[in-house]
Image (cartoon, rainbow, N blue to C red; front, side, top):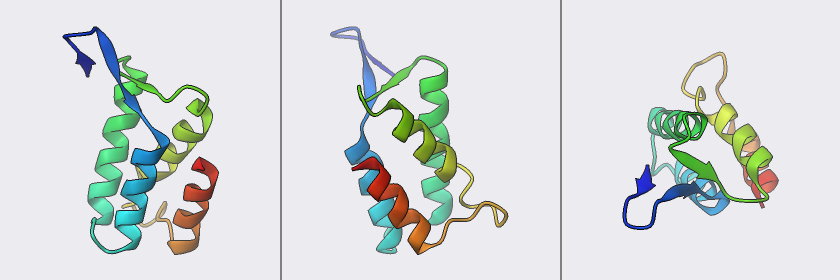
Length: 90
């Protein structure tokens, strides 16, 4: 979503994705909520409504792609896979 006052688009930041994953690992965020949030961010960027943090575009796209279906049993991510996503974003 763009900031109408400045015309700038919301930036999807590595720190924001890491916070969500850490909340999931701490049991503070349901897997379905994490997947839904990641899905919304991924497609907001695809539609041009939001942008990835400069220099982290690939890492963010990969992380959101992995997370957006993590509530599906066939694509679920375990603790070590979530921790690896955090490391890739740092």
